[in-house]
Image (cartoon, rainbow over all chains, first blue to last red; front, side, top):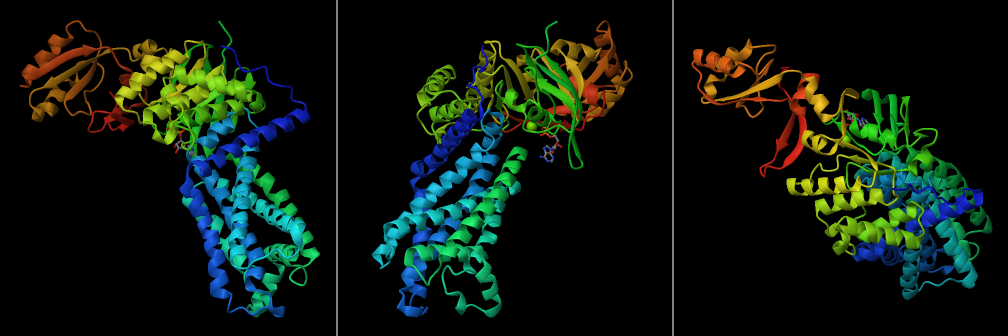
Length: 270
Length: 334
Ligand SMILES: Nc1ncnc2c1ncn2[C@@H]1O[C@H](COP(=O)(O)OP(=O)(O)O)[C@@H](O)[C@H]1O
Ligand SMILES: [Mg+2]
């Protein structure tokens, strides 16, 4: 029996090509789950849609916005961000499940790239986020939402939502690999995301919050992300270009910190 | 003397206060089947994890296929296959998709990965179920698929961690046949097991591992020989007479009598077969104990374990007579 030794050369360019292919193999495998288990797709999209409807119809009337902006227009950029951040909790849970099934052990014993399992997981969860954002946009349109700045701003808004959410998938990957137990990961990935998202400009204007909370909410990176998306969807004064840049900066910082942490946890995963 | 394909020298590994490996040494010849035999918690999985680069040892040195497990981990992974203690297959994917995925991750081309998957499904009698999601597979089929996946990369060295644990007896025997078949190609196999019978049947050489270290090594026969004398086994008519019977045969030779975990068989080490049975019968008769059965046995691996550790490896069975796991018995040293 011959060993698989005739491996393609390992020049840096080639290495990167292999790493991308490995990541795509894993991405594909993760996305299969949504195709094969339709109930999973249904239930993971019901919640965001329910949020759109609940917030629009429950809070819509109570929240007075300056300049007579419709609450649904205010809400949608916020709920995009909220959805992509909540969606990132699937990353940690998915990795913990793979770990408990022994799949991570198998992957780690294969001559594949050390980052591919994480890259594949974070990318497939972002693909799912994109799908959900599209679906919510459709629902939003049915109840009066509109991208008010044209097509390209809409594309940039969705890109911003996905990039920011992508940064969060790496935080969740780090948590999932460190905690391992699926149910604990479920709790641990939600417990901080929930208050962080609500104490932001996602659902209500910051001015309506308790005084002490306003300071926190104003500096919350999620507020910048929401305002950045709002700027792209609605224009001034709902956000500003600087919110977009700050959000990209935050995303960069989070990725720079959590990609190495997650990969280090993956290498040590037991 | 050929160069060993696996060498392990003084490997230690602790998890906090738990000293999982306290110094493991092994050498495995290429093309052989090596059995790592030990009870639950002995350190088998930890050893396999160190050799497959999943875990860094605290101290010591190990090589597999000429590659150091720490400094050449990436190269080493191209030469090995691993089937861990739990069947690591994706339930959502079909059997074929699982194998194709692993093939692609061994960096075969898509076409190669596909033909390799077909070939392996055929070889493992899974072709008929290849396009079904794995969640519809039985435990035995999953285990087979898991073993199949470990072979996709045509490994020089294959690691199987407790390949038959949790299987019913029929699936177990079926799997043994597959394991025998997969090493026919000359692959070196290191397998761990809690089952003496399994090591005896599959392995060319066996290392008995306990509390993180190898306590004996050799062929099955060598290990059996190491215990020295034969063992006299006897069953008596009335269970109430067991203490009397044990007392009666206690002084026969070189050790005290033990009661087997079944609560019926009394075992006592004896030195030579000549006159032993007569002697035993005479002693029991004098003690007024009636015999049902008496026999002399060459030691089994079970006895080896008992001699080496003072503890007994029990094979627990569930209601269906299936082996469900092995643990330590409380039997005292023989
Ligand atoms: N990740 C871990 N953390 C803490 N203890 C561990 C870990 N892995 C194994 N152990 C401990 O190390 C010892 C050996 O375990 P293991 O190698 O799994 O044994 P075996 O496979 O022979 O049953 C056991 O006492 C086990 O509890
Ligand atoms: Mg084990």
